[in-house]
Length: 158
Image 1: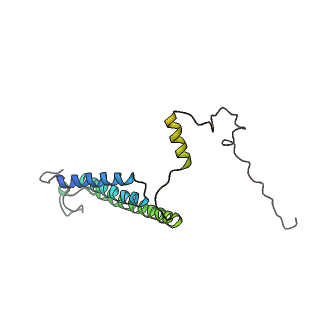
Image 2: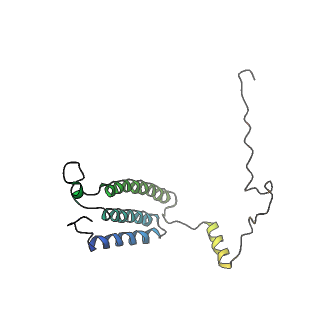
Image 3: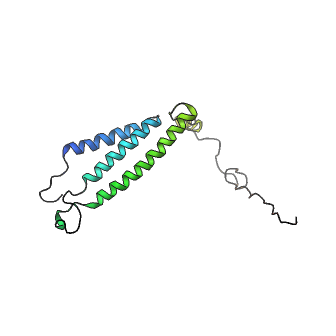
């Protein structure tokens, strides 16, 4: 901070903490709507944190004030960029939530069958028998690249 400028107040620091904590809590929910709200709150909390890291002062225009009294323009530029990124991510998550609601009538994220199998195996401390490895490169269907499809060349006469 510069001389004579007050640092971040306790209210702003608490606001950052509340926004980030609430955003992270909402991100851990299963509903896509709550995840969307969590992303928005987390983005706003991080933006406020970045702004608190900057120096306050006069407008950063050449000739308007001495260089030592100008505010730092880098945090402002970073927040502007972060706002655009958060907006894009919010639009994407909103589209995903809408599509989920449109197709299934619910926006809750369901467990995948493979996720459930991994949890069961982890509880029993076992290894999946689906792919233990050790096969040759030609015997493992997961590792073999399929041959490219053969295209027939059509010419005018044939």
